[in-house]
Image (cartoon, rainbow, N blue to C red; front, side, top):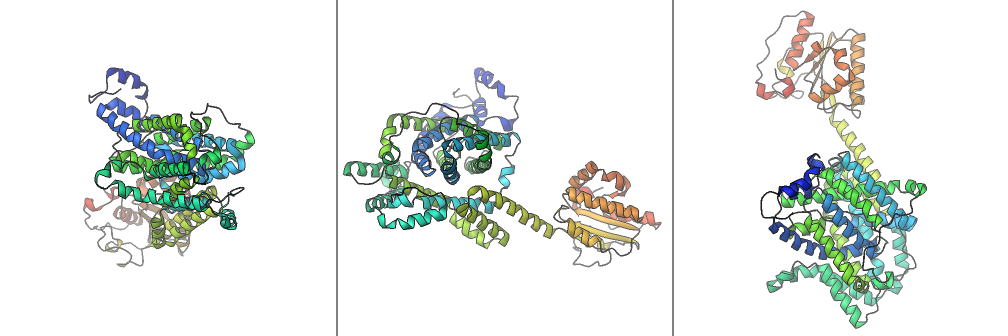
Length: 603
């Protein structure tokens, strides 16, 4: 419903009422936009942006399809289907979805080993996984994939894409292009004596056109052409040259025949239990890649337009797109950063621009599909080389060399596994290794100090209002302070400190003001301390316990074991309880301004 009013008409509200009971995070953004008001001016902006993005997406969809080991028509079909489904259900205002370079490596490997049915099965499974992730509210979780892992597999994919363009760029004729990177290099090296100089000339010319077009199109009166992508200019120019000058190079038609001028009829792939079993890990990789890249693209778009996307709804939309795409013969899809950025720069206001982009691609397929068969493979190789360069993030890759060694190790291992083994292993090992190194780092910063006997400026900040050095600790009382997370990675360090206790004190105070979280291992260790104190007749007092550890203790039943009277808001209360237990007179404690205390220490 398009109008010039700030709010939608009653009819629109009636149609959209079905979504009113859904949580806002599970409402498609398009529904919210139409409900809140969508003007004719917005429609015009979306229409113009959609046309431009459709033109930009055309060469990329064809190139990604071919590089993935499938037909160019499958790349186009994916861009159309994903563009429509993700626009209708998506959680981002300006996201544009379709095939991307991130999938090339995994798709190529699946097609080589399991064929098109294997790819379709894996894509369907990935779609189901993405929907499950969205419903489980994993939208925020995927953003915690370690940065070195993302850079590592992205750079590895870029290298593989660039390497895979060598045969088309040089005009080499191969019986079969190996899937493994090392075998690719050795195979290409043995065929270098059969390069096609015409193919090299077309490739180099295409690269020059792609790289120089932005500068040329932004000069003087030619600025009107600045919105036309250099890749499309290169395709049009070199295709015309090859056609009319009869240049002997391989074209899309020579490799794949004529492109169909319509979307295939929907059909389900031949799915078997064995194939489903074999495709589980590749499907999980596709789902992870789709989720990560889609949410990353949405975050980039948020920064450009000043709005916040709905991450869980975006995962559901990408899942639906990856379920529907293979039914029409398509391949995996996700949010595309370059196309999304182009969409924003050209004034897009809503997901309707993505619908227009899909309509443009469909129109080109219907009217000019046969002409696409004339495009030289060398030109597409040049397009993909530029794509690989842009996604390589080589500057960021080199910056991580100055980061901590653990991050560098994760980067290099993820990169190496992506190139030499496969993307599935790279992501799995990279994430696990990053998690282990993070746990180790957290364990290193977690510590327990015995601060009763050795009070000094080094142990306690003088400016700290809760400085123990300013207080009197009676004989028979020992005070420990725990710093950092009380979790499984640090428990062994805690055990070693508590095991040093020679003669049992009458009272043990554990200061927990610097403990913000506690897991089951920490609870188990605390339970062991409680039992030891009960066995040795030691009164245990816990001081300054934060909310999360308190809730964890309550669920584990430890509060009853310690006793409510043995929880103190701060060290002053803990020492007062200790003096009372020992029958000592109370002492005047230093005045503490409440504004300087933690929330759990006040009162």
